[in-house]
Image (cartoon, rainbow over all chains, first blue to last red; front, side, top):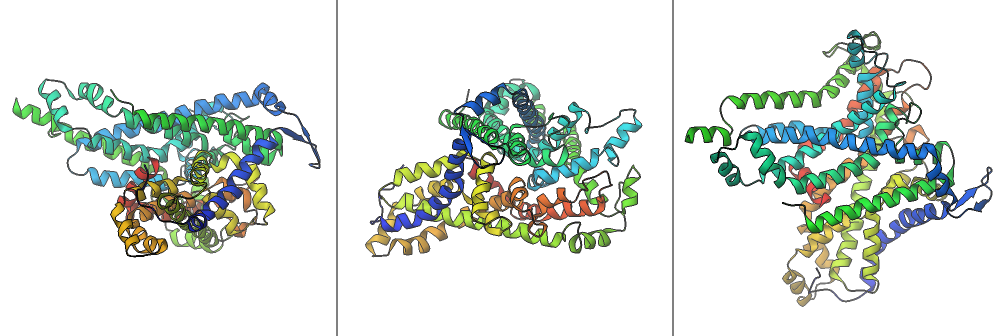
Length: 293
Length: 285
């Protein structure tokens, strides 16, 4: 889409666009280019010179047991976060949609955890499950269950998943609720007159009509769990125990900053870049086609 | 029969209170972690380290919050709050200003390289800061911007979402307005200030809400570039309050800080709920 009416001149528009182009160039394109460039080198231990290794870093990474494990961890983590945040949100949205009065109040009560930073959410959940002072872990102990996410892989994963999904429920609720309100009431009523009970109506009419929203939320939540959950993992587990919760973004950080392995970290950045690219393409494909029945 | 259909579709009758029960249970589960944090911020350290901690607030509210705000652990929380505020407002205002300008240029002018610039900006949509942290860190360090507000703000402004949003909106402004301005001999910038900016008010406000929360909740970037506790933001500063060894963390202070870290973005979301929902839906399209 283009404007029919435009202004003349080319100096002014270049000036107007200059700040954004400048900032993007300095803080975006240059660093992104550096990441690609550095991924082709291995710096010597003193950081004085570096040796060109071509795709060596990538080859090394793909053969690295820990890196492959991190891929699997990321996949499990993002699937769990997506499910744990979307299913309760859908459930609550369906309930809120059934209410004529009061759904606005519930919406207000439910949306604001969205504003809580992932890192703060991490601290809150860490506090509840802390092995020494946590309330929940204490009661679990009373029931005979010895909670220890510091040592147990599965419990660590469970905790970071729940802490990451928690604030996200608000976000998904908002989108599901808006979509449910947009479902034409006449269709539901027609089905009800034909004798379809609530759950049948839900699965055969409402859910298919929600598919564009559901697909959109799937992509957005996967992107969220890939990139925005760093704070949760850093505050709760620090990637541990033994890398059990080291997702790809966390590994870029720990190899690049803690381990100072620039070549490998850059190669990981490039791989992540490709992953983001694929996710974006998926998102745009969806916008073009719109999932529908 | 009519009565029954009514009951099923219009959501009345016995299932109504069950719906409320489930909703309240849902709200309760969502709230529980925050409630516990609040309780912990109002009791003494002794009450917490001997579990189970109480479930109702204690009488240490003023003491704990005063202690957190003015002494903190590494640095007073008031300082971190100020840093967060500057960062969040800086990111929101910065992004909105550069995006308004560049979207105006892209929509209302034909100039050499327009498509190229458009695609360059478009590309920045794809790459979150998390992916390019090491080289971006080097750039910022090279400029001597570590431990500075500009180092906190500028790298996070480099993104195209806002530009796209404004572009979409500008395209819906009727051509007649620009035509009238041109016929009247008004300069492009005059048209920008008198027509385009006032018309974008709601979009600007909605975007501000979203960007403020985005900026306030940043974690990884401030963690990397603010080594000086005086420059810590509150969201990343909480983690720094935990002792590195085996000591007990001072939970009342930490939890008071967590509550303080939530209050500004939560107030923004609740007080501007309509704008927030709109901004959220707009910026994800």
